[in-house]
Image: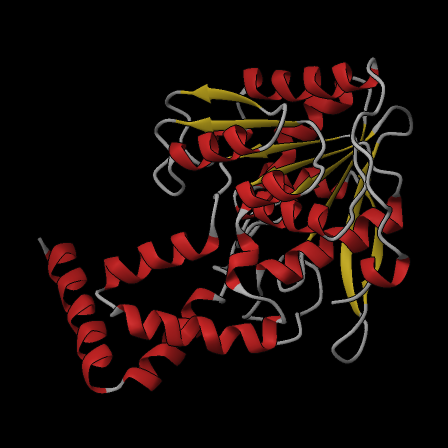
Length: 308
């Protein structure tokens, strides 16, 4: 009951702000949306990171260069690059790394800007964006390349799609519990909080000025509809409470040749520790190795990859 009252009170505050203080409320929504939640690696994650070879990749632009922490495991096999989600860190991949190493692959993970052990992003330690996550991924791919497959969780999948839009050359991509459209996700949050549509629109217009691109850019299915994309494996759980299963289905339906694997009972995070999911990822990478590369794109230039 107390939780319900707290939610109602919070919603009332946002509704009142939307009505009487739309400018200030749009700024508050902007700060809320672009603030990744803090997280620390689990004990298993810390052990994983302690076992890695660590390096730095550089993201340049918008001022001084910024360092992205890179973790490597293995010495032979295709390079699989792991991209965490919003508020995540490289340690969350401990089960996936173990499984892929056992399957004979080299594995690379990283902490995006304003996440984990990496430097703060352009707007400070407590702010980031899908653009910075994508540019972090691109910087790491340039640093360790060539990358065979990107495996991404949650918003990391949207960042991977953005990186592919910007020219990331990979043989394949795996998206785990990834959202289909950032505008839709933010509109859902605004509706839950009771924020008026015109306040949401004001926030989006304001953030587009420093993001350097329109929110319509961050639609993952559209990437598959408008340009060549690599083969994709989309894995999504029907019980995912954070990102709807329908988002995964929309991505798989729009990307030519994509395959959708539906799981049950794993939710948004246990999907990263499930042996059958890890097996699907390993099989996907191995299958790509036996086939000719059908996906071709102009490789992103070093300046494009390293620019934030």
